[in-house]
Image (cartoon, rainbow over all chains, first blue to last red; front, side, top):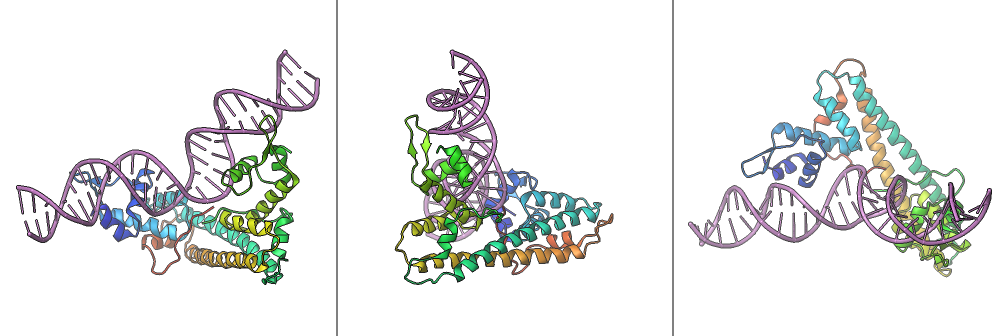
Length: 141
Length: 141
DNA sequence: GATAGGGCTTCCTATCATGGGAAGGTCAAG
DNA sequence: CTTGACCTTCCCATGATAGGAAGCCCTATC
């Protein structure tokens, strides 16, 4: 299986497969005589694992840990659960933060006529400067 | 007011002030004879505006638009409201996505004993490959 | 067997917002 | 005049992903 087929089979782009190999997330794939990467079904499984974990929002660092736990068949499930729970906590915190932002903005928007007149509480609020104790912005997608 | 004082007064780091100037988000600050940047209270207001907008999760692109609307005192509030509402919609969509992730993970975690035994539904699920119709991952903070 | 096309390889670049740091100029207090 | 805190510019790094260029390889068709 060459990299294109592996990409199709796993849902991970060829670019990303090379990247994962480069950063050591997956082991370096075997090579054919002509230097093409050659993937086994085991490799595909790893890629699918990664793909699924990414879709659940795990960071590459968390995935690194999960992968090594996955490969270690005698690991205690406690460790895996710890990573997952930590991630859930993190997700919920970010959700709460974003909800606070959305609610604050909705409120401002409700107060804005949204017509031809220039008066706008949204801009007024933004101009008021950093509000006390407000959630700090997080980088966006 | 030099850049350090401007940073303290606005809550935006000196690094970021230079960056905002570089990308044209704010106009280039005046310079003293010794080439130091010199900020007026008006500049500080702009920076505070940006800071507050960032804390509400607006992207730099949105902020660019909001800033120009803010400076245009005859703009219709409709335009501002449109940007804000669009942002709220976007936020709520991302919230829903993240909640789906968190819920899915919580469910898996609940099924995991979290003890010394290696059996773990979390890893089993991840190994099952990309699930059908699952929300796709978004980059993280 | 030659040739065309598509796939593979590596390497470089960019994104977006932010921070770190080096090298060198400037200012204010002692 | 020295010292230390500040300013300047310039370069590099992050994380995950994508785009592209140059060149090699494989397969199918003529």
